[in-house]
Image 1 (tube, rainbow, N blue to C red):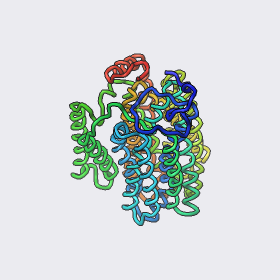
Image 2 (image 1 turned 45 degrees about the horizontal axis):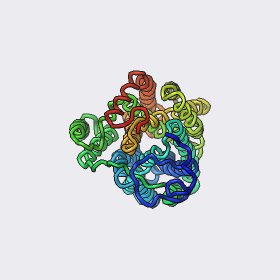
Image 3 (image 1 turned 120 degrees about the horizontal axis):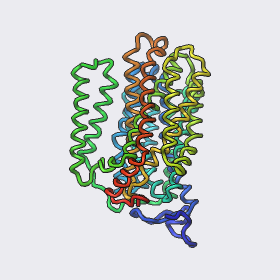
Image 4 (image 1 turned 135 degrees about the horizontal axis):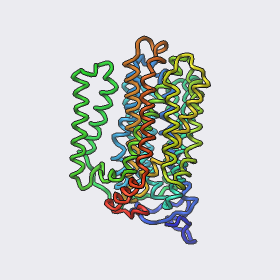
Length: 504
């Protein structure tokens, strides 16, 4: 489909700054380039606050821990309570946006995220901070998948879409870059509560710009709510995450932990059975007939598990083991964030021109090397060695996001763009949650003594876990981009009612 501007003459659909008079189902309406770019920038603002929030909170974890006198598991919950709620609700938010309107859902998400940020800055205790982080997550679940759905329905040309997703990935890198530096500076100068203030003006600005520039859209045949599937998703993720985080302290063989693991396994089996029988499931298993889509989903899980574990463990290592200030730790992490921002648009260009395989293979190799460099770190590991590993990790992570995002939304029906992008976003958040939980549990199990003296040695199992996860990125990237895998994507598109060549 062409992406050129519409015929001369203003209309509510093509004039910048004029929004459509009301919700409209997905259609081949083409917006002019200026309007498309503006919509992309508005969507990127949501990624900025969500992405920056993750890295800001990570760099502030030691200060939060000291103020609230909490353990490593308490710090894990500060991160994972947010990620867990986010992962649990992403698919519901995506289908809700398809049904009730993407702009409307996007604005509600921005409002809840902004309000949650304000409440986090006022939290008097760790339990309330965790609760307000969960409110943030409810709003956050309505942002990235819905924004990706808006992008999918704004950029119709596959190459232009891949480039737009590259810009989207670059914004993730920028948010990662800003988070540690801004968070470190604020934590050190004002206090950790100020890290949540940053989201408020950005959120309010995004709400106003969305109302002005983003047209409302709906799926022509939206899905009905799947409450049973939604409850099962929450049970699966919550029970698994709780078991992993609390396993080291409660004992892996304790009745509580084994019961939670059994609950997660049974709920997973029930979820698959229920979703197969529903006409309009929360989790459409037909998407997974596409090997590239399944591969992209699994790559997102393991890549973001590595990313989440890396940020969590590295922040504690720099501040607790090496004694760096919050600002110094943030500046040390800047090479990782900067290279992520630089490589994301390059990866988007490669995907648009050559497909996902080159980006995924390069990403897997770089991530493996970066993680291997940290498997033997100590309190006295040269800073140059650390920075080199951060650069390699950032290069690899910058390469991985555009191909998995583009694969998730390309070739799927525009009417189900919200669901497809929500599955992709859910896999990222599930991965990040599991990364923090698993790596944190590995460190806690091997931690013998105070954090400052024992953390460096206790971190080694965590880094080896990330090496394995990074190797899976490489293996899955190679396997899911074969000619056989591409043929499966065409078959899956036909089953979903899409044109296998255009996704329309």
